[in-house]
Length: 136
Image (cartoon, rainbow, N blue to C red; front, top):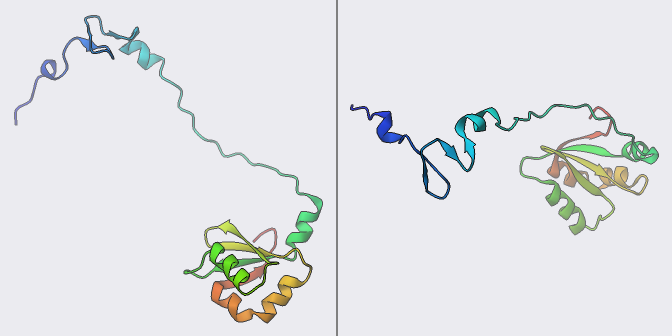
């Protein structure tokens, strides 16, 4: 295999953005050397621990919530739509990421009752349901 000399591939004169040649290696007033030395700093993301104050009633509300592990064929949106179809609008299903969902109700005791009354529906939507806790 023949090797092409560098001089044939890269002419000694640099081209301006306008297409004009420059005999001194400067393009738009910037030399290659100064462009390399003044290259922008690469910023690397850093993990930071974030501490957030929780509103007083939030933890109390969450204590009556449930975390569900969705069945492979289900999505949070589908579960929420199914609840509306069977006329249970007082339950909210929120994605926790991956295949987990937070299930809650603003009406005290309503979610617990719903889990008992339409148990078969819940089992068709979720592989498992557990009470919410700070660790879940």
